[in-house]
Length: 136
Image (cartoon, rainbow, N blue to C red; front, side, top):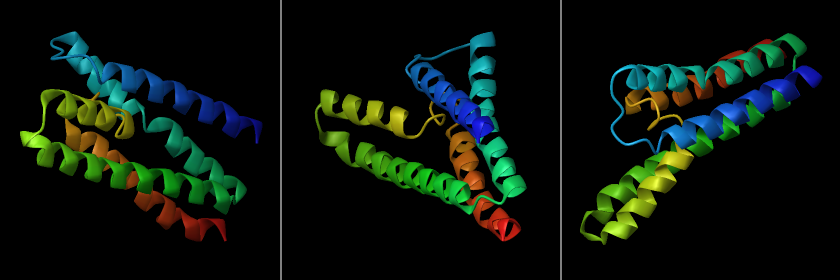
């Protein structure tokens, strides 16, 4: 149990770091590559949590990860649609929606290629279903 607390803490720190880096406008060069690696690295702790859940047969941990993944994907979809529908709204409204998208969909904006973040959340979600059979 102590091991999972450390992993959750690491994931929380990566969340904060990725969220902060999502606000960096137009990175280039080495910084661009580092943000991509940071975005991919964001999914290492949840993979470790899935491994721990399977090893110790903790279905609750898998369900918690599943809920987090679903929440992130649904809110991301809603905020992307909101951003598209707010095209005629004020610039301030668009900025607020984009900032909310950065915070909800970490590490999608941080890693520059939005598909990487969305794919990572989808893989995490599907992994919780696949490995649920392993915890019986």
